[in-house]
Image 1 (cartoon, rainbow, N blue to C red):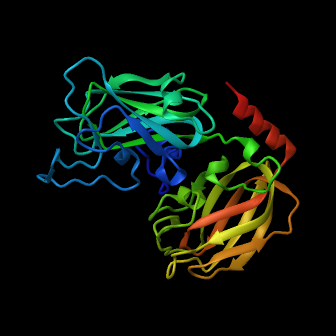
Image 2 (image 1 turned 180 degrees about the vertical axis):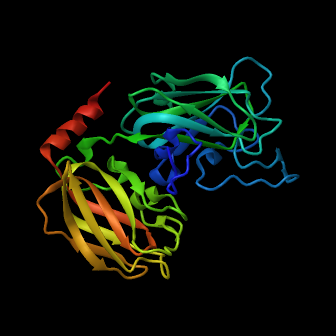
Image 3 (image 1 turned 90 degrees about the horizontal axis):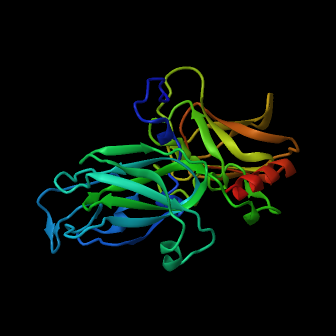
Length: 338
């Protein structure tokens, strides 16, 4: 894997996949057998880990993470996390930032598939499968574990052997949505939650491009895709793999919160196999504005390139349309796979 600048990226390739457990996608820490020193909800906080030494509360040093008591009996500690978007898991990141004398020496991860809205009792009795066996973990480190499993999962269980503290958990993977939720309706073909993904970007200096296809309204200028200031001829671009082959009829380009750094213009090119065509011609944009364009188009596409001129940011990109019958059938097949 390489960075946007072209330099080698030392991280495993799976870290380029979205975090399916992200709070912004609807992820939640549902339960933990113990959280005596620090709350389980910290595990999926969207913010960088913070720490201030020698700050003590009634339970000891305050940690931005999940920390259990010192275990005096056999067994291990665990926390159950609901994925915001179910899917195929490619890798797990266990960040033990600032846990030095109290990190777990080993961790493992189990996963299960329980569609719908299962209760905690139902989850505790689910068919949990190991996706990361007990492996060594380091303190104050980013521990990365690749997962080789093609099954779709909805929940993970993070295990600490035997106890300790973990600051953050990320569950990277590919979304696999339930097509029953939108089979006969128009849908956002560019939405991460529907199975779309970012395939590349010319520049991602200020923020992760995947922000442009996240659910919900942008919360701030940092919630979206923003490039550095371009100092040479040309323009910046963002490639998005659509949720499936489909016909786009409405494009929404949202520059909310981007007041002095919005693009001056934008266009969208579409691709269907080897065929390329213009979806939206170069169009003037306004700062801090949700733009909605009706597209006179009946050609299906599998991917798009959003071009912004010359640089700037895009808070959200929405492409509303319908999947082809073949794409919908493939989505159903993937969802039903064991």
